[in-house]
Length: 237
Length: 199
Image (cartoon, rainbow over all chains, first blue to last red; front, side):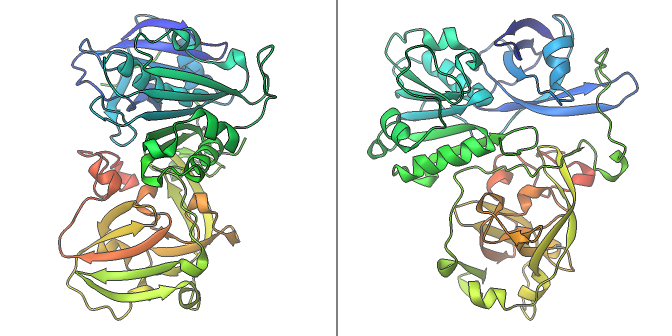
């Protein structure tokens, strides 16, 4: 059941769900949400879980409204607190972070690809003494940042450091022009490959292709770069 | 009982009847891979068929491309729910690659450059059902879609059509591949909606 709604941006909404008998999830997993019309027609889409695992059967997903979307307009505009939602999960066992992993963690998000990475960050912040995280978060413009205030929070143990890259518009006084991420940014903003970080890259296909190639060119071993690609149709943007 | 979402009507395509359950049509060609895209130079590319510790067939790019090719037009169904209909490929049939191979194996584990793997019954690779494809829509297959060459088994969900195919291991016993070990269905028939383990 939907227990809370919160707008992240003008087009993205976080939905909190209370789920009876939820088996728990790993940071990075997703759920399938099924909407069914009164006449029985149904449509299913996958959404990454944004919240850290907890013991209370509560999860959050953040949904971006796609102009041509079939399910996302309903979830970002029509659904109300108290509505039941049908979902299946958790799903996926590859694009996950476990607190017992000893190595440094490099997260690279493109746009709404931040969601599964946010689950990892939240779990990391709730787990004292774990490996350090870096997040490189690429967004169109400052207003497109999701979870911005929470990402600004200082970590008590400097566990997570966050840097932004802007592709269309930058904040006032920003030292770089807006541009797609490049080799120099990846070199200066991500862990040196000699530390053998595990890298998690999530976003639209063209972004993930580029970021994963740049991380590999920096010397990160391909088997330490985990990717999750999405997009309504995967068309290049 | 399904939970009804009041006010939801959805976007129904007129061609729904040609789609497996739970799929929607796309005109794009989405990419789904677990890691970076491997870039395999043609002069280093090879494809092998193995059984036990024996390599029983081996091709380099030149010998592979000298094999007779076919031009299947097939529908693609991805477990992430998109389907793409009427796609045009150039490839070498697995019937050609496996011609003359005498084996008691009932299963195959297909490995990619970049450590991906997927398993399927050997009979699903035979009888005009599977190809090693190297061209898509008349152009060389792009690396992000599995180039130089990928397996194409369109009657199963697309994760079975391993990109960047490198070797095919014939086995007497079934063994889960990459996604199969992470909870996806062992067989993956889209018409029976075999997405996840237990479907």
